[in-house]
Length: 188
Image (cartoon, rainbow, N blue to C red; front, top):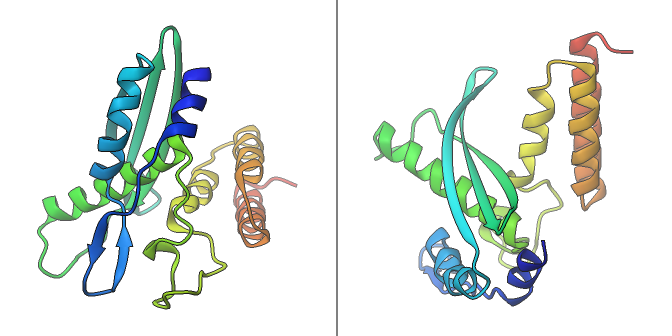
C-alpha cells in the first residue's frame, strides 16, 4: 500500500516527553497519534485501534491491533503487553490501562516503523548502553509461538518471527521457543 509507505517515510514523532526521575526522553502513544493524524488526512487514510484481552497459558495480555485502511486496502499490526499481577498504587483497571497503552504504542510503532531501540524499554538503567536482549514488544513473536496448537501453525508463526528478527539474540530466542513448542506438541 503506497499510502502507508508514504506515511512511514513522512512521519516524525519526536521524543518530546521527559521522565525527570530516570532522566530520559520518550514518546507516548498520544505523541504518535498527534503526529500521524495530519498524514492520515493527507493520504485519505482511516486508522482504528482496538484492544482485546487474551489469556495465554496462565497469563493475561492486552492485544492491541492497529488497522489502517486506504481505499479498498487494509493493513493490520498487533502487539501484546502482559498485565502485571499487581502493581503498587494501581487498581486492576489502571493495570489494564497501562498494558493497553503499552501495547498500543508498540502496535503503532510496528505499523509506522518507529524504531525505539534506544528507548527506556530497551535499556538496562544505563543511559548510553542498549541491551542486546529482545525488547518486550518483540516478545510478541515468542508469545505467538507458545500459543500455537498445530505443527502447521507453529511453522507459519515461527517463519514470520524469523523474518522479522533483527539480531542474532532475537533469532536464538525464536529458535529456542520453536524447539520447545515442537517438544510440547510432539513434533519431530
